[in-house]
Image (cartoon, rainbow, N blue to C red; front, side):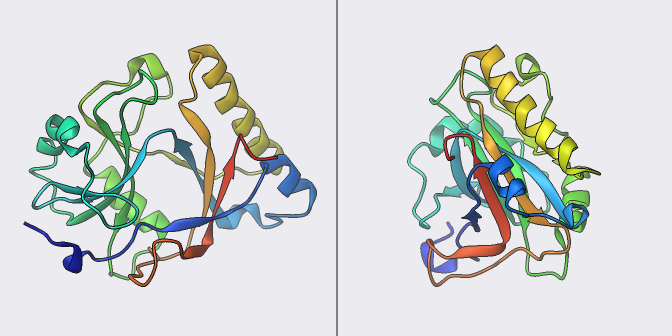
Length: 206
């Protein structure tokens, strides 16, 4: 069984970007094409060691709710990737309970975010946009988006809130922008260390 001292990294912690429209108004993301957007889901951040199907939280501790994801973890038996950065859906809403959303592939290879996303797409289907089609106890890949204009990115920000209102539950919390050419920020010195190439924007922050 994998031990804490064998963890490859703490899960990457994005910088806080505040309310997205406010950030745009202040001049952020002038070169929007350099960034990819991944939706932020309301769940538990989980680092998954695929060979042992062991789950760790952001602080490198064994995730106490791991047993609730056993069916999803069994689906990883055939996956050759060693470490996955995931969102674990359970308890906070009724969508996809027991399901893992793969956010990123944790690797020391020289693979940028777009290359890592391409690799993940070989093994996992994307999360459906229609939330009533999200299955329980399974594994999905988090879709990522490149928007041609700031207006298109803002429209996506607003669409996620419409989805929450339709569901009457906070499934989406906002989104995370990642530099398209950024490597996975592997570091073991602190769970609180922020990654400069990833920026988080939440609906609850204005």
